[in-house]
Length: 461
Image 1 (cartoon, rainbow, N blue to C red):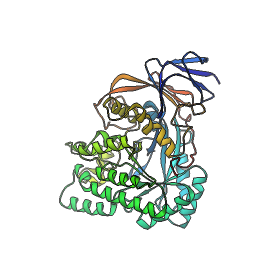
Image 2: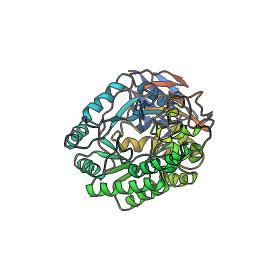
Image 3: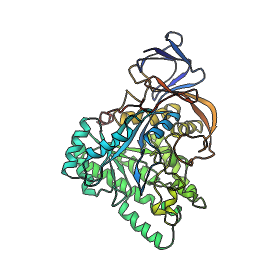
Image 4: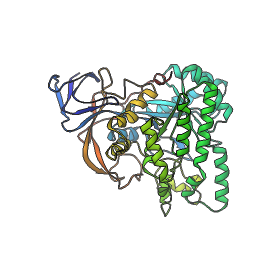
């Protein structure tokens, strides 16, 4: 293998900013040293640029079956788009079907992903059916590197688990070292509100946000925290969107509990104003948890600064407006839930640095290092240090771009951030030392990305 030197850039990790050269050998980072000291066969000039770890997006849904259709990005298109956006590792969700083993669901997702990914990938397991066999399988999956399990307090009749099932899974994870990830919304109560809204003739997309009330997110978050406390288990709450839910997480963390929270760019940059766009355009922004009124954004940014929220993932789950989102015309409850975003996350969070919401190091922390630690991938992923995989992004902090469906690489016919002007852009991306984006040209290939087993959460006492 040849040696590659990234020369002249500002290396930014979660802990440091240093002008240094980065030497890559055999797909790994061999050294980080003073400029001019290291030598190699090939040099990439990063003068005036940032040299950052590849992003780790710990929440994506490629090819997810939902609401009678499928997420529009395949593992091939979705991971290619991720690479364009500076993300070099995703952790996607394998799904257990009710009445079927976890293993069957995991095998199905392996079959979808294997040989198709442009970047490295791992899996979480969605647990839809908690029983004695499922609980035993959880132990086996942890041993082989699937160390996190997602449960839903929402979607009765689909993914929903009741409090007893949740408690049993949490008790098991307390024993086997797994991490329970929770979609915290009171789905039983929400279904009542959906039924009542539709009966009143309230069918437009904006009512999706009105029935999925912030208080029902906060109530479920509180209940999940207390169930985890009873079980003696850690808890990771996904896609936190509401001020009241952040307050529940902050309170639990102040009590010293192993409770963690994730939010997503859509909650930081979009709002119910988007859901209310006319002519059914609001359907583009239907996701769950839903977008909230703008005033919730301040609490989310504050949570990211104070570390009451630790991770920003995308919950990338794209459905085309034409033919997919349109399934819900006349009935908001039939709009497939999900937004495209895997390509936009690193750029939007850099814009947050430009706007003064977070520091540069915090950008890398919430987008690279913490998700890698949270899900047992660090220091292989999420940092630039000797021995780490050479997942490296050359980032131009001064380049300006306009986000648009015309230019994005996700397999979806709209952008949630259409027309948004941002500063900062990915220039070159290496995955395990191999250039997958080279000066804004795609040079990767399907099948370069490999499955990556994970250790358990690295934040647990």
